Length: 509
Image (cartoon, rainbow, N blue to C red; front, top):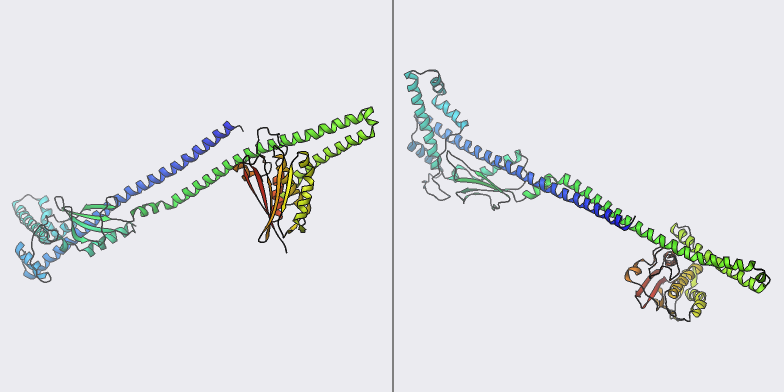
């Protein structure tokens, strides 16, 4: 997959994911708006029902008062009689003061409700009402006129009864709270609320203790409405409205969030895998190129040596034959070592490589490793200095593999030194550990390379891919072997100033 196609694929996948998230957010926002509208509609109905129930309750109270007076006196009451009778029933018989304050108000009248009107017909005679529709004679009309006058008189008394009573007598805070509770429970609205009754924009004493007006959470309706517009407003606020609305879509929203997170995780995982596969593909291509290059040279050398041996003049010279045979043997060893390195890494990955360890002096292994690279350093006119200051040097090691670890690190120090290699080996003790530091003055590494040098097949590009021979397996092998020895390895490096590899090895008594 080329870079353009890969970038287009990532772009469209990202665009699709963003689109899915935006659609989910739009759906949640739309659901909240719809729930808010439905909640507002239900509140208007609930507040209207509460107002109607209070009107009916007030009508029943007046009806009972009217009947008690009529039964006790045997005659229809007049306004003054009914008000005097009501005062006598009020506890304390306090005088009523009319005014415009919220406490005592000259309230507007309203007509009797339909439910109570039927009771009035019982009082004044519903037969006379029906008779008007069946006959037009003067007698029926006189009966209707009389009954109609009684009806008007009753309505007028009811209006005066309402006007006489202040709002605090017409409805109490406890009664209003009970009615609101009943209506809200009936409509499955189980959240805290606060309420208040306002008169022409001013609060009355009928309100809950913690009522605060907020346009976002407060709903209002006309209260105790009469024929004309009522001056009273019933306000109810819901401090936890947003939580209540969101809880109604919490289940489906949670599922939506979970599925969206799964899509995001899967998307990021897919992108990560694509990037890794692309990197692995590039690394393997580099690996194949390096291996091909490194096999090509020894194969060519072997072929040239064989052709030379076939020459009759060379064949008769035993010294030259032996030299060419040694060259073939050396090149064959070189290829075998490279193949063996690849196989060892594969076995380490599969946990198939058995490494036996026994107490060993680390200084001895350091000396063996130095001996392996000594001739190469001399050929490059370089130097290797040992600073073996550690007093305790015994660890549980496999001498062959641990020697290979140090040789690999020393070999890298030599290869990545463009001039004469200058290498220092330091050892020291820190608590129950021995530190082995191998320092060079070569090319150094970037920060990104330091993070990845122990990855299999990874090699830092230095312009020409073949200017430093290798196949990116040496340090990967080093890391696997040290992990098996419970050792840790770090690298400190600066571009152009060299590198220092630090091995932290646990000691044994």
